[in-house]
Image 1 (cartoon, rainbow, N blue to C red):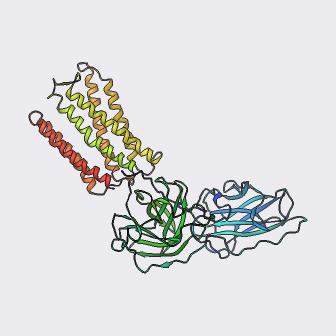
Image 2 (image 1 turned 135 degrees about the horizontal axis):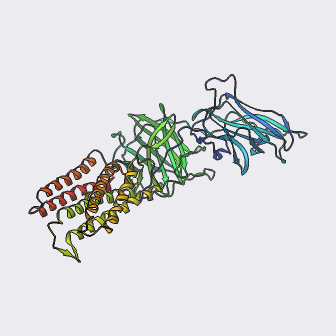
Image 3 (image 1 turned 90 degrees about the vertical axis):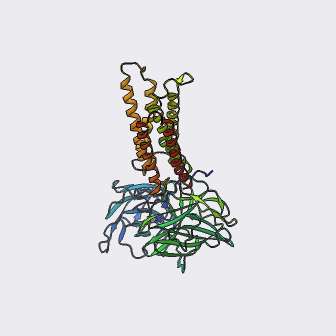
Length: 569
């Protein structure tokens, strides 16, 4: 039995600064580097940072102004910023605290466990000037330097630009720590692959995970391919797949998204950037600022993104959130769109390996699935309930009631016992199937369109039907016809809504049955029921058992094909 699968969400910020449009950028307090996965601009910045005093005493207040330079070319605004005050003799030490002048565009952050020790933006609106107040602490060093990171866009930013130095009255300043340019992520020059990857050697020389199963990226442009093999103290990875923006894979200790080691190959115009990242939960990936990838290479051809790189099996302790490659992990593969190097939510459900594998272990030809087991059960239960048991229950009540008037089981008429049993089974299957998506998603799905709303309607009407039946009047009561019409109307309505919901559900990303033939089979089930209903309406007597048997056999055949398809995706 296939194990539970969870969504790998590799969606990231659409347009932010330090990858957070709300400015909550405590993650960047230390190196002041945006988590954008791009190199900062090192040329002269188009902005100024000034202080209204050059000297201070403990407790003094200094107004710090960040503004666009009057002579700047290109964009005359910035979107995000991060301002800090540091010990000029030791730029790793954050000093003092800030007060806001305009809380509409600026906010205080807690850096280095110090409340209000940095200031950032509150939104991605265009700004030309920001002013804040810095308060000198009682234990202030002899001199303080203001540093700023400013971003005009996702790929246009300046990191840790030096600002003015202010000195404490009557204290000789120590030599200042200097640095040139911007401080950002380390870079690696990538080469271009001369030819496509191949599946040759999968299972014998290298481990492979492929979709469709057994495909070869050398001959099939629709092949999603991941391979890896140990090379001494490192592992060589190859990743390939058709995508508009990026292909990626992740190492995970379980099949639930979160705390995963992620690697992305992101198309940026006519080149590919190869990045390591970390996903802490159902959030965007945070790119690594450490250079851990070696021998990086890439290739673009016929809409297929390919990249390869080598990574050490064991990394130094300072490489946080990077997994050791000598352990067992599940493998996730995903792809999606990217704009200007920014990745968006994946286009399809990620392919996830069926079981854990040791990255440095013996070569294996791995298999995986894009559909979580919970969602497969959801689809199967709903199909059985609303294309099989409910239709059989309707036929029992509508056509066998007048033909089996005297036959009894356990004190009740046979048709009624069978009708009640089938309908109770329908409600039970619906209830279990209704709960499963909430277990999988951990709440409400915001990307499933109208499908979950219709599902709630089906669940509500399915529960109303038996409750209504419990309070039905006697067969000879004067108001019995009211119950009959309400029971018939509610039952017909829920059956119609359920069929529509299933049509919408079979192509949801978490299940995604192959189109168009899966839609055709479901349509055939509906047509088959309508035809059987018409035939039974005409021949209610002699042919009733034969028609029912033919209908049930045909229904079972169609349903078996759909259930097999669900298990195969």
